[in-house]
Image 1 (tube, helix red, strand yellow):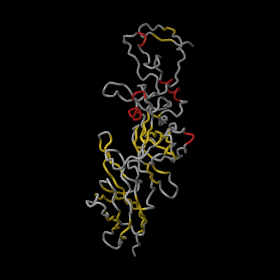
Image 2 (tube, helix red, strand yellow):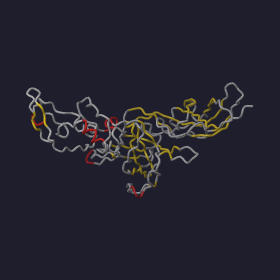
Image 3 (tube, one colour):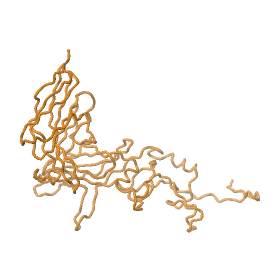
Image 4 (cartoon, rainbow, N blue to C red):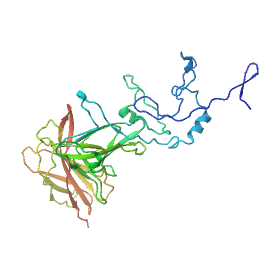
Length: 386
């Protein structure tokens, strides 16, 4: 039976033509413009008094009449992932620009002490089913969701870096293709919290070999590294990795150049001076180390082995999640003087890992930045209490 509508005043019925078939295909998202992330085709409908008669009552994105509730429900039935499910972040893309004077700038560069990376959020490819609304325009009125703003809008909570084992850099200074460099590992070597799309790092974690925890490893000079990055949603869903990027490091900068962001050296000769008396009211283990040039001070950490998983700490690069700050020590006033330090311990008959690392304040582009050395560590077992 053909559809009809009834005039409420006269009661007369008028035949209504069947609506044309509508394309309900969900649009993909582009984080570089303000295409919203709801995957609904008619989130905004032009008002009936719009100056352009052709737009009145039409969707701002598809130019079609708004979908009915039934059509919306039917359209969602075959969404993959399912309607309302957590979005899968797109694969990040390494930043590319022409640079100054037509000199290409790529997503990664290396020096003798660190690697710097930059990527974009990944254009398009948020699958239908993602239900996070778009961001409001930035203060200057630009309606864009680019970079970290776009990542915030889809709930990106962290990024994971995958850094492969180093290989010798070619003598001529060129960067080899990805196929000629050890590939990135299957597990992440660093976790970065937040939705930022740049990072400078002077070390990374070698993958853990059970039962040993991951090991922090400094970036080496004159090497090539294959790296990848992946975004992780606030729900813990990791998206596809980026393409492999090969970064070439170069000769190490002189550590005496304090205006550069060179980390200090690790404290040498970390030694146990005295075991704790576990029968004492406040048992302490005493350690010592020799100072290093250009350090402003030292941090000492304690971890009780076997009290929990010791994984990468995303907020403290170079440390594990179980490392507890036991205290700090200043750089000795007398050059070369041995530093001695007492660490309180309370657990008897337990294995403890003690760590010390040096720190200094460097300057990057006019801003202070604290740089840390790798940790020097030793292991002690406290005595049992009768």
